[in-house]
Length: 212
Image (cartoon, rainbow, N blue to C red; front, top):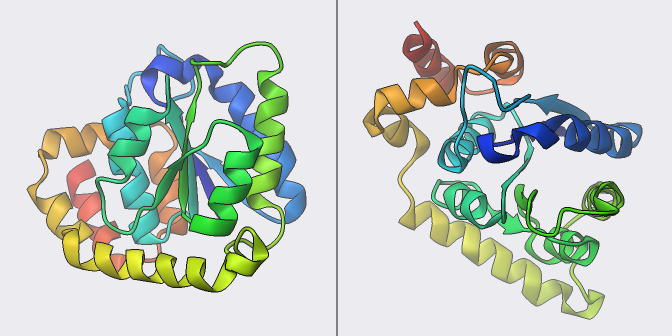
């Protein structure tokens, strides 16, 4: 699985801790982590939580990432921004039980975490257990297991509803403020990671034009 990490500007100082913890937990499982920043509060490209949501949508819809880990101070803004876009199903994850149940019940493709609220002593342990519970083993099996069939049915219904109620990503990319879009995709590692992993030629072509 290709897992992308995105930190917005208010919590950019925690990027190294989150990235190293995520990588240490999931890469032994066979996953690969791509750190899209922000890498520090002083980065030239500043990502707000709204930009984190847009970037998440670009990565998921293009196939450049299979899963996105993001967040903000409370996690709420990043979660709302991510869920504003098609094909992104993002959960607010505060503790390891949230991670396990989101993975088993909702089987989404993004999480938003609070990197300020409650992020104190033992925070790195909480991160470790969250990532372990989220990415270890098969997801979408249901919890409790006897609820698996209705939960899987509801997930399928939600995905079908989102196909109807959300505009497709290309329409969004063409109609969104182009300056805002360019700022979102101008991070130091974006082009390297995105174009190496993108599986959608139409999205890749449009992104190249915006970056010119």
